[in-house]
Length: 239
Image 1: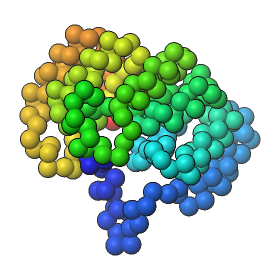
Image 2: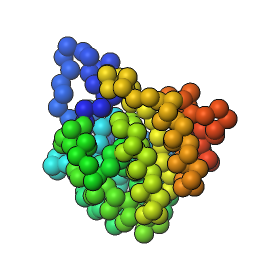
Image 3: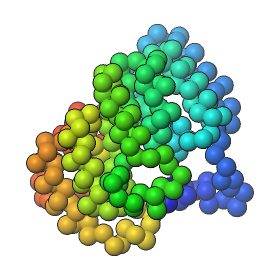
């Protein structure tokens, strides 16, 4: 996606950087070693919370059956040893196999939605992402099956559309909470009045009664005294 921060990571700036999307070296072998250690320990500590899969790339890239197969194998192995996961993916269609099948009750499904699907803005920024309505459908399915759900409203591109995502999600009633953050590392960020957006965001969150986490980069623009979140978070989640 055009707003992705991954291009700013040190690895992406190396001269030998290969932009092809592929699993990390020996990913499944390394995961298997970790899972065996967990099995020997006998339990996954609750304080660790779920494993996020993943934030620097989509674990279910549309059209890449090879990568989706690797992700499913990894998810299944984590499930097999009792490790809860948060599956964060824009690919609602391929996520349904996991949502409808072998997830555990402690797992979460999350997706990124920063645009109003009734407008055309999203195609300019998410040219290769699956349609937004697939993401909403996957959220509804996950909610019906008792999974915790949330939406990453990050990065905010168009303030009006980001606020509409929250309003629409509250109308559907299938979103557990929202994680809202600003656009960084992109010239478009300078065109947004973040202070005004913070004021409007506080109003929408209050009016709708939404559960939320305002990411740290956005907090300086929120009204003074407005809570950063209304969730029970583990320390590593509060950022």
